Image (cartoon, rainbow, N blue to C red; front, side):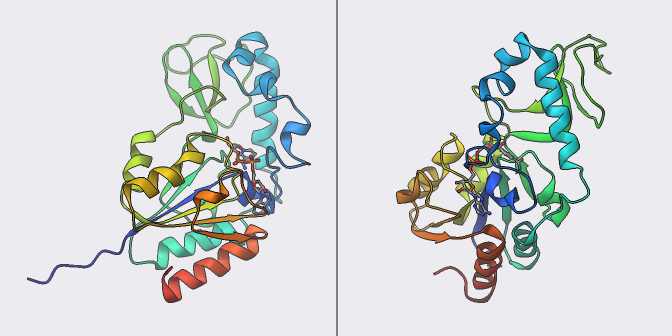
Length: 244
Ligand code: NAD
């Protein structure tokens, strides 16, 4: 009997570099966020316990900056959405970014492994709330009414990423793995290329970045340049000819 052919899945791991040309700064580039703020003072659980106002103000400002009128999806985000619409198999974006630009570009299958902007989580009851208002040390959880226990629903350094089982599943099904605009310095994301090569011997892996990333030797193919140029061109190639 004839069996429907399902092409292998595609996973695109994205990092801060894909949103750079939309006007959102990366972390580690020479004009990046970490040159202006100290990681330990805003992106760890210790920082939140030490100075809640400082941490919450930082994320309140981040949320507002993402909503500025000029922050819109760029050609790279749109190309990944086009790939999902036109490719016959499963296309999943696994993003380290907390911004909403993949969804705004039209991608439907997006996994935010480091959380997403515009959500709060209660440290007392665990409830996640979609929230567009500033958090303060006096904020009250809408569910358990605890005071001062709401934090951004974002993975800080030293914390476990979200959706790890779901990510393992899509990696297990993929025939093409892309790492776009990510420095290869933050784990476990930086380890996915090795994970997928070990479990899928025939997988093709491609690094698309402005410059060689830390784990560049682990990829089969390397494409360097701004994401708004490299990603649309690569997507055109895959849709026309596949990746081999
Ligand atoms: P990173 O700052 O460590 O690295 C960014 C990478 O993107 C660099 O290798 C750089 O060469 C590359 N890059 C810069 N401009 C580019 C461009 N125009 N085109 C292609 N590549 C470009 O970022 P990362 O690896 O994603 O670090 C992980 C952490 O950064 C994550 O935890 C993520 O949550 C966080 N982050 C997210 C945002 C966001 O949501 N937009 C912004 C800053 C940081």
